[in-house]
Image (cartoon, rainbow, N blue to C red):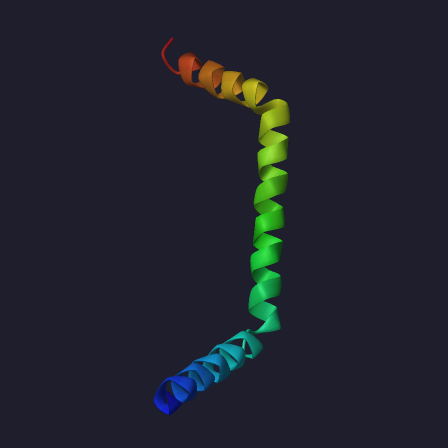
Length: 64
């Protein structure tokens, strides 16, 4: 019984140390990248059809 309690305490301490060692700049960078991807997705959903048609038209112009 004592061995199990020591193992649980060691695991709890290790997890707490892991959570406390998260670096704020890495987390901030990940959040910034997620926000940027969300902004690009929002712009694409707003004007995606026009962008696609412009690419198709410019591609077809090279055929003639």
